[in-house]
Image 1 (cartoon, rainbow, N blue to C red):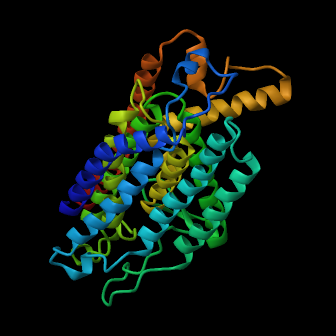
Image 2 (image 1 turned 45 degrees about the horizontal axis):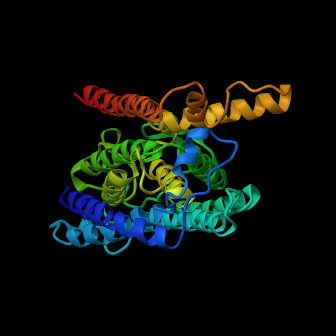
Length: 377
């Protein structure tokens, strides 16, 4: 727990004090967010606000991870302490940084060309596919070293089974199928967070809830880990995951960094995260779901992102098939803007939706644990 707290605090401090420096630097470079002409007219007042703020919380998370990992060296049990950077960290942080760089390229082109186009949708999807493929292969094909006497010590970051609260025994989709599903989850969540990032603080606040919850889930799994000698022989009671403390540390660092960034990103925003931050956060959430073996719980845990993505698909499908729109405008937050809701009202109410999803998913996770405990008693 000590390492997770250290990582969260370090990330928060770097982010809250580093973001004003980024605001000044990006403003001086005229790296402001181009405003879509077809969007709500109230957004025209945001012209000149710098973008690419995701750079700050990405760097803060990476530095905080190192600080938290140094704290892990004080753990007394060598079997429970990660030795160096783990494959889990490579997958989570590598995907976080890789998609962040893809988003940075998109933001840079928007700023350079002074329009909201950026890289093409096809190029963005190809980039997400390549990154998802590489890290999906690493997650599925590189198991940890087996510890003598511990049957569950050798684990991969991802599983070849679908998962809800834990892996579903009968839902084996093969390693190849699992890599394809990993790519799908990464692409879906990256774009879902990107679509949600349209109002001041909206995506940041929702991401804090989701990533913070994954940090709590991962730490709970660490305390009830099948690789812990204390849980040998009681498989139904423990969690067969890889490096749960490492997952909790990364989630804690990212949540702390986002809290510091939200101070400057909330209404009226002094800086936007841009695609740099949105794509990175979406891929991190996806990889956290994979690493904690809670993939099918993700649509509920990330309820707001799910709603935003589903309504976007409904709008596009309806227009393509019937030539009619269901909503005034998508993503969904802009529908309510055109309906006359204030930006702050939309953000707060959408945060409530995100909170409902998080609380419900966390309740299901803990209820399953209680049911397991009841069956053992």
